[in-house]
Image 1 (cartoon, helix red, strand yellow):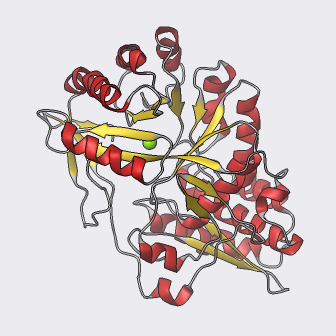
Image 2 (cartoon, rainbow, N blue to C red):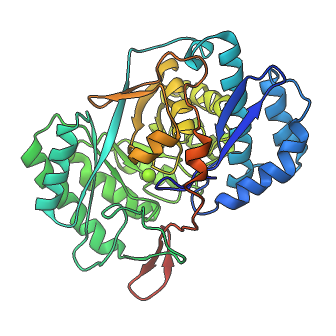
Length: 388
Ligand SMILES: [Mg+2]
């Protein structure tokens, strides 16, 4: 574990031949649980096994524990899976994307985050992202009457207890369409715009918001409801043509079963790190492709460069790629995890180093130890806890 700005959990597997592979097991706010799951329950099972049996190792960790799914289990399995893919690709002398079928495109389109507590601050933020080359931009704003809301301030603050944010769905739903009206007036019709509701609305509220945002031609509306109620998305889908993206907190293909089979969404948001690794995420993307649903891998600052790199290899290789979220990292994070992947003019490329192309500077990592930190919690104006 290391904290060069955020906490990261990294697994290193070494073979008898001295080949090493890295995997990301970071679960924001619950890092120690995954680290312990790995060290106490998974590492003893791996010693002496064949590192080339990736599918068999994945299945044995998933089925063998009896207790399936869940973010802790799946982040731990993901770290093993990615480390084994890293090893296999290094042994082959190829970048991972070559083992996934080779590249389907030359570079990986990203989107970046713009936010402001008011419109001038938001416009400055959008202009800054455009200047960085981002070809698509997620727009989040403050809501009049609410002190702190999701997506406007950085969540990088580390503290012993969670920050409390405010929420009022009615105020939000009145405000957001007017924000996109002003953004479209200022930046024109071509700039792809995204927005994250962050699980805050009921299906009928989400349907209404999607309809209200149709004139502004969003690239996607993200996590409009807490979508573990998969059936609820039918109501949203029947009532709006705004494209929908869902799934960054999902950790199993079964979380998507209704959403994909009934084509209730347009983008699947899962990351390598929180979905059990490259092995199951490739299967999810292939399943989604049958329904013309595309990828939109979750890319917050709390997925380490190891998990990010594994996702970029998938982005380059799969046919039904949509877009990759990329938030960047602190300079220190780039130093702790020297990497072959590049970010140029808003596009990522995994690089051509054998494996996933990320190493770990263990000495530097040790100099920046784990520091307890929580994500915020969210309360309505009367004090009721709401989805964050
Ligand atoms: Mg999100």
